Length: 341
Image (cartoon, rainbow, N blue to C red; front, side, top):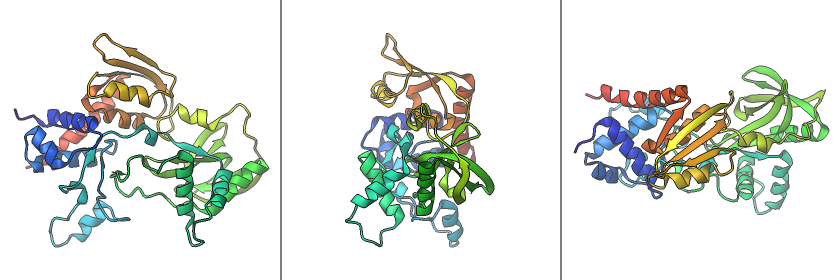
């Protein structure tokens, strides 16, 4: 029986979420009993209509530093461009590892201590190469758990960290001083706590106290950093790691209570238990094997990204506005089908 677009997208979610090895477009087309072109369109709608869909592929879509808009502008002869992500060899994934949703915290001196150990690196190695190795050494794996799987949304190469930025943060912490920098061209003075690496977006952040609130600042938007004359001392009872554990990703915002039902299908329950094992939350197993998950979280968009990875096996019960936001995401994706002649 031919599935309508809504049911077919749910089917694709479930298939990809259940497959640890990923599936090709041809395999998805055969299972869904549709033409390959239909699945390609489904994936395009899911991938580009909303940035929260956690689609992955083992093929790079474009060359480094090149995005889709630039590619389309250069395609003046009207020929269809070759996109490796949509080739017969590409395997698609819809299960983001939770490790990629947890930012990793570092004290600046950890970078330099590890750099001294990496004597095999040539002197010409860039700071970014050294830092990538340092992250791997601390985390115990590469920046992505399943190489060569890559996140496919645009150009997400790591932003190169400036060695001066690391040095300023380190010296300020040692001297118990605040730091000043321009953030989005606005001068800011904060008390530095360390550096945070968020592997899902491959971004570095300065984590710091600003007017009594702990925040993180994307280093790409930081310039003219220097040590201030104002004193700063981190409270002894404060832990950056504990502060991060209450969050999904690096978002700001108020905390809110969630209640989610996960269906007992395709190893969903076991994966949820693994993903939230570090959190202080409530898990209730129903008589039919379904799982109720209740938690208080910060990070609405990243939480939705996680939920989308479970496809139709996850249902938002509370809050109502989060349920509405999920419905809006699905609606935006499906709206693309109205544009197809």
